[in-house]
Image (cartoon, rainbow, N blue to C red; front, top):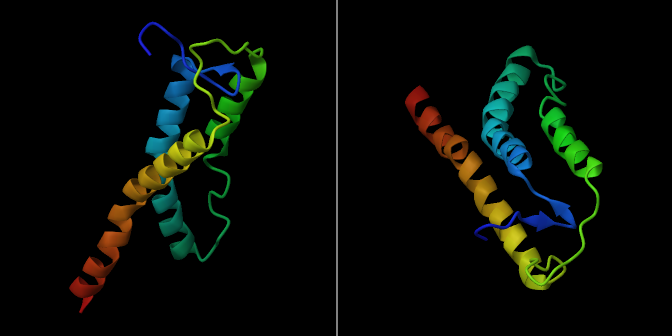
Length: 114
């Protein structure tokens, strides 16, 4: 999409929104793992429960402030099954790559404690 600003659900996705999504994706594993460790140590499941919500709310606020764009011939149709499968597949792959190191280290730590 050279020279075009991508749009999703009639909203323009600019550099600011992309930075919010990227920071959310990069901070999620770090925050979840550290707050999980804190919750285990403190025996409190509420530690940092809403810590990442401010990034998602900032992204939602930016999209809400934008007006709805009209669909053009160059727009990516987002109401098809193939688009939905692409989004779900990407979400699963990125989520797995974010949390796989923590899942892989569990058995290693247990083996080292014996």
